[in-house]
Length: 486
Image (cartoon, rainbow, N blue to C red):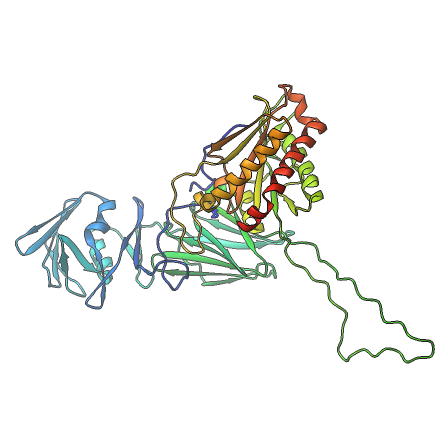
């Protein structure tokens, strides 16, 4: 199995995401729930995209001018008597604390409110930024003042959205530049929050689609961030492609309708009256509800991605699928509801796998790999990268696993014990193996090697059955701990 340290396709991270996946987070205003109430200004330019804090002074919003200009070029500031002097890319300026009149490149300019100097930091009114920035930068500036988003130059990212009439239907969103939103799901809605992308609204704030599965989407911006909320009657998940320029929204898998058995009508005595049916009464209707899966099995690779060439005839993708189907049969025989992410030779991205898993809310996710190197079984848990902190319902895509590491280790220990009981060589390791880090549940990767160095044994039904029985026993032993971790 070739390990990959490559970040997710849209260059986080997703869950979410970054899904995702991933994701350095900016705080979001209380108007878009889940974020801190701290006010932020986001600045977008060809050189950098960043945010700075906003503070209130005498009832007006202020920002630090030095902090805004630093990422954009060479800047210095000093106090000179009663003046605060700032130089940016050879453009000199003078500010007087408590005054509105300033000079930039020898020309006077009036601020809408007084300039403030605090601990050597010059504070200017938020509403003065368009005029000031144009004088310092010499380029067009577009300021969305109510949402505190400042666009410098021609940096705006636009998008289109269209529902494809597939089964199930999908919403395809194409962006003019790579994007990496933070993703969260809630009943009836998938929310994508763009904190570092200069995303601008379409012609209408509300987009409607001719699809009952994905009827609409809305765009809003607030406190230095933009949000697209996609509405639907069932949970939705997002996958990324085209190097982060395309996001595809798909309804989560739903169970087949469960038709309730109808009670037989009461017996009627010969010559007796027929039983009365209450007015308006109707037999129970068929109901449909999402399946609650305890285990999600992910047979790695598939489709265009062959995986490791175990020998001339045997591909890793075929071994993982065969083992996944066998393991599902064994788990279901022991009462574990199990979802296999791919049941055929299909191509799936890592983001798709993570999003489908998180949408299913399992107790444990098991990723399956195979190798011709060594013998026995290797068990992996996620070696997490440095990532942003979780913010309310929004989970950092790259470190979504962080809250489930204890449950993952519990599962690995139990699996190792059961494999050892059956005389199968086993090692437990950490690895930066996606999508383990994107999974918001106990998550384990199982890599199968031949039992005695013969690659052809990887397709042996007897060997795969022995491993499947061991894994099932390991899950059975910690069923209660895993169920409580959800």
